[in-house]
Length: 233
Image (cartoon, rainbow, N blue to C red; front, side, top):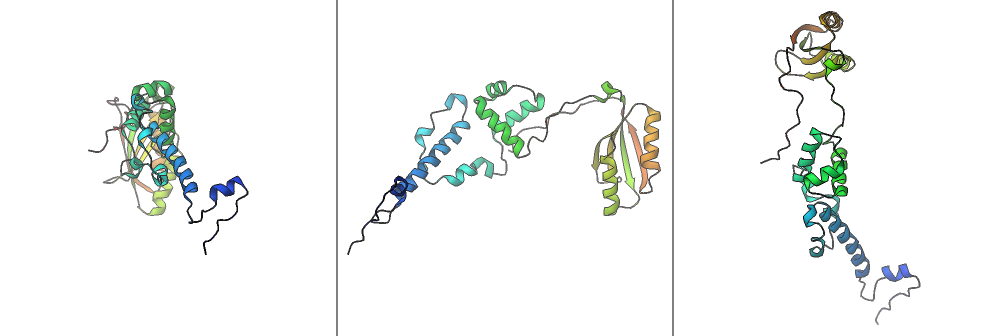
């Protein structure tokens, strides 16, 4: 005896109730259409301004949820495409450039360009957007590279030194390095007397430091430069 379809009294029930053959095509179809619209929007955002709006008519992917959540280019070893790299290059040169100007330079719409910049911040490609200040202009005309060697390379000593270096304002940068020395520091000073006082306090009076070597910077040959953005070959 044939099984009767259940009675449907509500519009939502009519959309989700199975037919006599048990099909739920209406629900899946509606969901697929929604995902297809999202997929088309994603594709549209990734296209140059000249090609935008022409792609969506050719896409119908019934089950494309995974692709939408994790775009194919983000699943590669290199998550950046040519638009991302051009944006990074421009932002490293001038982080205050208007989004409209950035969008025109890379060939995207301003909303698509802004979404890409937000994504680059969210995934940590862009760490910070700061002002670069020359120490000399703020009364710190002397710069030194200091190479520090520890008495003992225990984990405790290393952690203590790193904490000291992080908390010292005159130390602008610090690196834990290989070779004959344990740390390389970039330090600024108002004059040699000021640096000598700092060196006595930080290095000479610290029992954990065996030796330190000071290299006074005579002139800046190449200032802080943008990170190369060329993609993998």
